[in-house]
Image (cartoon, rainbow, N blue to C red):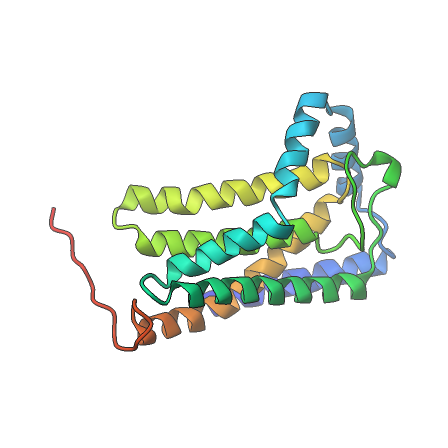
Length: 222
């Protein structure tokens, strides 16, 4: 199933990139409508909150969260190896995202509409891709360590809500078109569905302490 999802997301991303290239980066009507709506509904308080949220979607904060996700995925004395893997995985994802953005070279919305600073090509959105990658890592790690259904739902919902907030802030602050954000989500879907199965298999083979052997399964009695 992950490979099917990755294939579908890859096809959709390819189609979106081709459509954007065919329009020479010109925003779609939906992009323009959403952008105009965001500009018309700005307020100082919401803008300040959006800036705070968007700042967490990249840089030191994102890498720190990636390290936490990796450390949680490899509990015990080898937690630091998981932290290194988490940081490396995010760096690779960002490199792939940047390579695609340079190849597409889509222009951002007019700089006069920005409520914060930005740089580089627009598609896929860097903050959207970064926060989504981190959210996937956190959700997987936290869900793996959760024993009850409710905590698993929360473990997945909280990182997902944060990533959604970061992506929304990019459009609200006027620095990305809506389809830039969609492209970021599609790219992360491809990366996550491609990378997580082999990483999960490696996690099982190495065991919870990183020394090898199969993991023990704990069965909760009602």
